[in-house]
Amino acid sequence: MVGDQFGVLTQTQAPGWGFGYGWAVLAEANQSDSPLGQGTLQWGGVCGHSWLLHPVSKLTVVSLTNTAFEGISEAFSLAVRNAVYGHTEP
Image 1 (cartoon, rainbow, N blue to C red):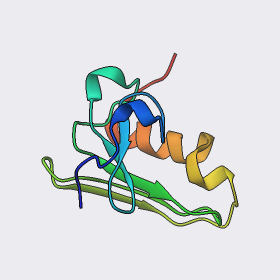
Image 2 (cartoon, helix red, strand yellow):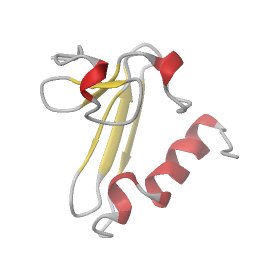
Image 3 (cartoon, rainbow, N blue to C red):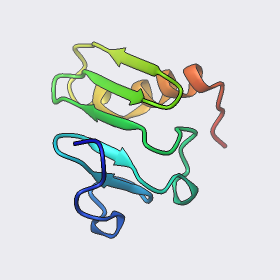
């Protein structure tokens, strides 16, 4: 369930991301511009919730908002991710 089922070439998400059975899987972290680690699972919903789980570091981040598309994968969810990882984007 947590492995990439389609291959990163299908581009279900950004580069390096594949798709498992129900969520995005960071299958090739070296191809991603994300600070997230290899094997991270993440997904978001249309009403603004998003979550990520990195099994190796035992890190889980859940964001529940009522911001429609902004909360899925736009500035808010990226800011939360970056704050957790201490990452700054150019």
